Length: 106
Length: 419
Image 1 (tube, each protein chain N blue to C red):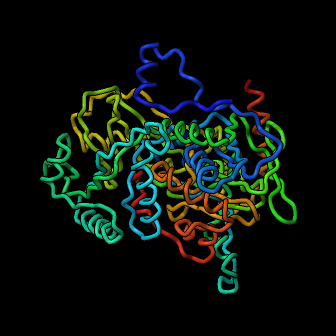
Image 2 (cartoon, each protein chain N blue to C red):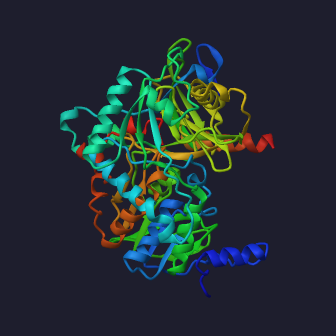
Image 3 (cartoon, rainbow over the protein chains, first blue to last red):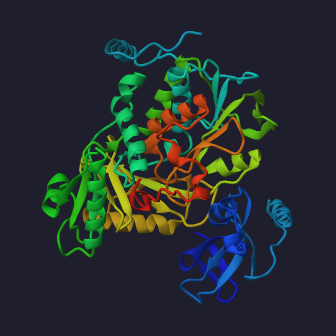
């Protein structure tokens, strides 16, 4: 089970949270001007990395607020937590720091 | 080298007398050659079946299956082995029924006992909405020529005597649908049977061979880089389940799939007590009993994306609670093993079979939580798609472009918890 640090409530078990999938999706505007392929890509195509993934979580059984998480999809390690609306962080940098952390732990 | 001889009553008796000491190797552990007519990436049931039908029905002489681990070591060996075809929409019903018909003769065709047991699959209804939804699906199935019966509560109790159908349960059982031709099969045997039969037709099964790159020129795919060297091929089929997105990224396109852990577990062996497959979308679990006597139990995916073959404990706890709601007598049964596989889930809970943006590169993925049942049909239609370069008629509705045309095949009702 994941232990997730809600930025507003602190460390809580995964069962208190709802998962929101990929973060930083921008709705293309205006929708009517998009081609079928562009609109389909917005609706359905998602990143699915084997590595660091930027994703949304919501503290459903707590403050009910959304926030973003950078999590490794193989180790499940949570590498960064940051507020909604902040610019996309540098995934390569987070991955690099994670490798350093894990190397240091050994 | 000579191929493994056919199994027969005589061969079984002779090897039994010899304490099973000299069974020959059933398929070659092939090394990769520099080039092939077609290469299948992924040595699970779907990939091996694809290779078998490419060689058997389409006469491709030089075919290889590349598997980064060992064959059948991914989701093929990690599922709960349920086989059924009671899907709602025509497209899915035809595809899964195609598979079920192949299952019915598969042991004979492969000369390998896949232990297909048509013990019946029962989907339970716990409220009026369930009853309406299930009867809608049952009628849709029958219009498509698929067997499906609607059972009353008393008929449910008679068909599966272990179930608690008392009205005092928190989620009382009000009825069910029953597909008698559904059941279970031996998952490992499916991989081994297809591997053995494909090998006998000259297919190279290459294990411990991970694809690290997909090479292409202006005309399309030209080959693969692997941990065991480069391989040339003008036709490549990706059948990598949870790792499909990783392979697609190597070829420069994205998929609408998300990889999630799907967990399952088995109990200690018991005497026969669950005579069929029991599934319940409402209490969120499904159960059958293996021939060894273990209760084989599963449920839904873990919500988060993952490539680790493990999930979180609350999912196990919820699943166990669902099974105990259906079978209160199992509350003190000990669990022996639990595990997870990485499933590739599509937005409409239907697979993707067909072409990719790269000519010569084909994909078969997105089976999500319920691909095992489709193994023979999936391999059959995907082989035809690769061989002809155009989708098999049963595969055509499952093309990748449905996510831009909007022609989705929404099978969440038939696929949600059910596998």
